[in-house]
Length: 165
Image 1 (cartoon, rainbow, N blue to C red):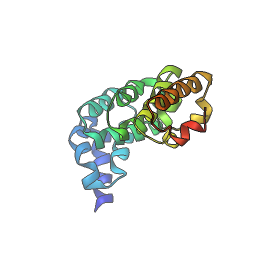
Image 2 (image 1 turned 60 degrees about the vertical axis):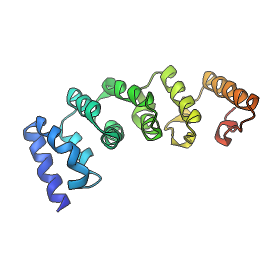
Image 3 (image 1 turned 120 degrees about the horizontal axis):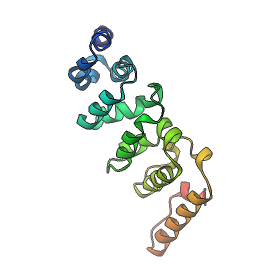
């Protein structure tokens, strides 16, 4: 039943991209966990529609969009969505923002700030895609400074931070 719903929904979006606005919110419930990604793929990389879905979406919908970004062939067009997620106070959105797409397209400053926000929000650094590739002296300095602040406040420094400074 779910596969059938997803197949029909993808066909509808391919025929009429605006249909995604009706289908996307119900996609996971009706079509299963992969349905939202399938619908986004059917859009053919229409960034404007993806942006509207993100802006109007709940956390689950935003997470689905952030997770699907690496497969949508958007180039850097969706960096604004990743930057928005990094401003969120929801750890799931912040972690998703530093997934494969964010790691590939965020500039160095935004990536470093995102990593620091992960530490601040107690998100394990293992959740950051490409950290080893993107780690540089400036990020090491930032983490070291934050660790010093934690120590000065008598708070523990996360082990994954200690491993990198």
